[in-house]
Image (tube, one colour):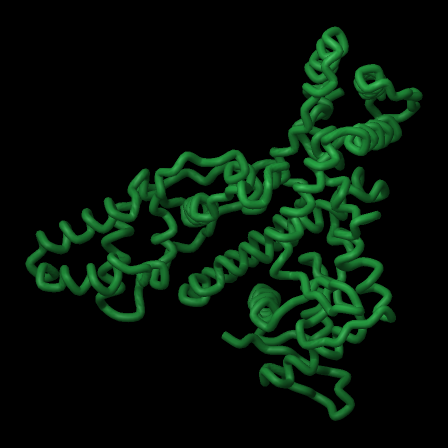
Length: 440
């Protein structure tokens, strides 16, 4: 079984638990592709600074080593102090840039400083996720000019302290289509350094949400999990829109689809990933259905014996894996693991999805896009196309490629939004040909 690489070890582990009758020690580890664990919300620590640092290192192939902010400040000021042309400007550099957070607004190199805190397992997972999404480094050189001569001097000095860092070879990602758009979009952002700096963290928030929601859509729906992933329908509304129960797609494939307390598919993400991690280090869509199902059946039978649940052997690999996933879910429903799973779903919703959820009271909750998100996505789609403007339908198609779907009412609201922003051009009075331009 080429793609079921660790199952023998998993079978042995469960057999030992059977011998000691210790079902409580059966672990559910899902930290390879999921940056969420069963800790309480307040204890779920994820160091975004380290995530940004790793991403910028890989993108620009540069590193400041283990320098923290104080060390960077000391070295830069000492260098300026020892130069007769800049020694009188030391206090200016210190006050206006290095002793404040202003340096974050002039160069992405500021993200390279280390905070020297111990890196948490959740942070490691998130770093691995973005290493998987970034398929290649930036081929262009980092733009080292600032908004004024002082900023350019400062950026140049920090860049001199950097060392070349080899690009981290792409980790396996569950979502190759999202890796393609992420890599393209972040490189599009770098074309405008000030825009890159102002939008980077919001950009990462969007892609974290898209990764988690599309991962859920792919893995938790049986018809998707063995197919090469493509963007699946997940519907959003605009923040200014009215919502109603008649918005079929938004209600059928929106917030409730993922987070319904009774049948939301996010309920399955943690246990499913935990089970699959005992079969292979690779995504389910890489499993070869021509392989024998015997080892998966054997593993499932062991789990059934451990928890006193009956199991019937399946003829194909996919059927055996599906049965194993159902078995795993049964175990969660009948034990304290159910509470652990609720914590995972809660963190998913309240920490990673909160910025994308709006409560329309009697109409329910919906995924939504605010104006900042809309403009960022619009600019990425258009600039990434190498065109100065795109038909509005092509812009909407670009949204879909990233996992964002709009119904007919939201499309009308989007047109109205663009009209208010003033970045459209109509080529006919009927409105059949509406072109959208960037706002940069």
